[in-house]
Length: 257
Image: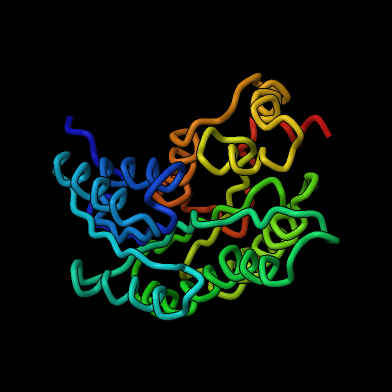
């Protein structure tokens, strides 16, 4: 019996798609039959990703831009209809760190961190939700972070913005049920460019990354593909009775307390 692709005929927008968890999600979703509108800042990497997807027989377009801009999010939704005629779901991976202790952090960086981590998701939901309401089995997956629950040195903007994002995701799930399922994922340390940038907040960045993996119950960093698999589950009909939930995918860090 031929394997049925889990997202066959579905169209998804994926932000933060040019690297890390976003790229892994795009590749997996494409393999499972999804048509993709991809967003990121790096044009070269975005074009390479589309080429890779098309080589595999998939369909994708890339729109370079800043998710913190209202108009970019509107353009993503419009592009889904221009190229694929529909929109079935979102995966919001884009994010930034905004490093610095409270007394050192520039107010402009605080605001920028909230703009990328929270405002961007609000903007995309604002434009996408009316269209998702028209589709059966619409699903949204929002990448939050264990930083919504756990504090890290020199990460006040990141932790606060992720806590706000978690609240936004839960509220949206309540407001748009039962038509749209909206869930969050809360990754721990994953081997992406972001964790190496985050480690700059510690005296020995290389050691901080090494320790991040060792401090998990599973004794390793997560891989972008680990996150992509959870996104696929939440975007597919396999999770048809799940909404308003937040899934920790952290190698067991939060279980340690």
